[in-house]
Figure 1 (tube, rainbow, N blue to C red):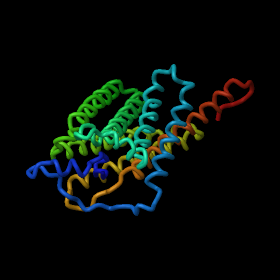
Figure 2: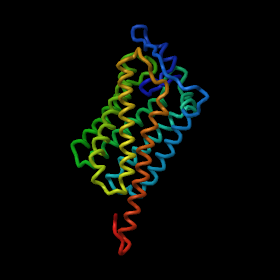
Figure 3: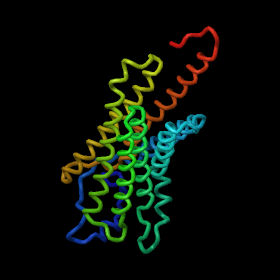
Length: 268
C-alpha cells in the first residue's frame, strides 16, 4: 500500500486492477527513509494537539459560532490518527478479500480533512460577517465530500477517478487556506496585542496549508515530475498552527475575562 500524491491511499492491487487504457501512471517520488519515525510521531502529535484544542473549546460549546471550529479540530485529529502508519496499516487490514473497502481508511481520512477545511472556512466567514460566504463553504463541504465518495472505487480504479480525488483535495486546500490568510492578514495590526500570537499561528497554518495545496497542484499538473511519497508529516504542519492558535487564543480570552470581572483592573 502506498500513499498517493493527493493524500489518498492507492494499493498495488488497485493499480493492477486498473485497465491498461486507464492505468495509473507511475511517478517518481520523494521518499523518507523507513527508519525515520517522523511519519508516525508528527501525525500523532498533531492529533493530540487537535484533541486538546477541541477539548479546551468545549466550555464554549453552547456558542453556535464556536461549534464549526471545534468540530474541525476533532476531524483534523481523526485525519492525523488515520494517517499514522501503524493505525493506517491496521485499519487497512479490514479490507474484504473481494477488494471491497480496500483503501477505506484513506477515504475516511480524506473526508475528515476536507470536512475540517470547510468548517474552518465557515468559521472564517463568520468572523468576517459574510453569511453568503458561510453558505458557500457549507455547499462546498457537501459537494467535495460527495466528490470524494463518488471517486472511491477500489474494485475498478481508473486514472480519472484517482486524479479527480486528488484535485478535490488540492482545490479545497487552496480555497480554505487562502481564505484564512486573506482574513487574518489585515487584522494583525488592529487587534489587541495579546491576540497577535494566536493570530500569527492561524496565519502560519493558512500559509503553510496554502503552500502544500499549491505543491499538490504542481504535482498534478506535472505527473511525470517528482512527487511527494508521504504527505502525512507535512500536511500535519498546518494542523499545528491551527491547534496551537486555538489553544493560545482560548487562554488569552480566559485571561481577559478574569481581568474584566476583577474590580479595578484594566484590559490591555
